[in-house]
Image (cartoon, rainbow, N blue to C red):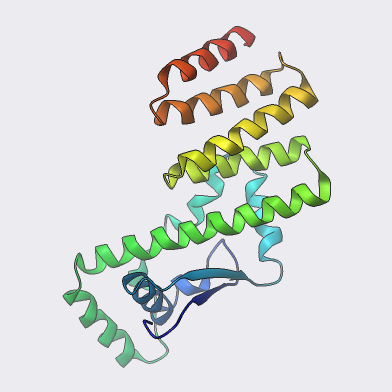
Length: 206
């Protein structure tokens, strides 16, 4: 993997990504991480549309949860000998299988967020700043938050709040929810006074 300037990860779908079912794919992702080789996701036809459905769901947890229940111990190779070889290699790396799984899943979640952000920008270019776009922003913001990208999450939450204020009015319950979402990110960043102000405003609306 060190011999490549960059690598593509082909994702057939984000519900059950094939790279996580194939041990060689997972091992190559791990190799790219250890050699600092850039990884970029590329989606199969229809995968982006399915991701839009996840981003439009009622809960942001529908975005990252597609990767949370994967156990790479169930990944397989076409040749059983290859599976055994990789298994022996996993015993020698730092953290063993647990460290391998944590690193690969963390990277796949990061690639998921990158893809979701690209999809969101395309939807905004096509439809403008609609309430549906605001919902996608909010869900994506929480996905960024879970990855520790607080600045990006904050920007998305701020934009979602602006859209809701403009489309629904300053005293709508959904506007209050957007205030609460933004306050949660500010709290994580240690901006307690700003977070408290928004929490109080949202409570007053409710």
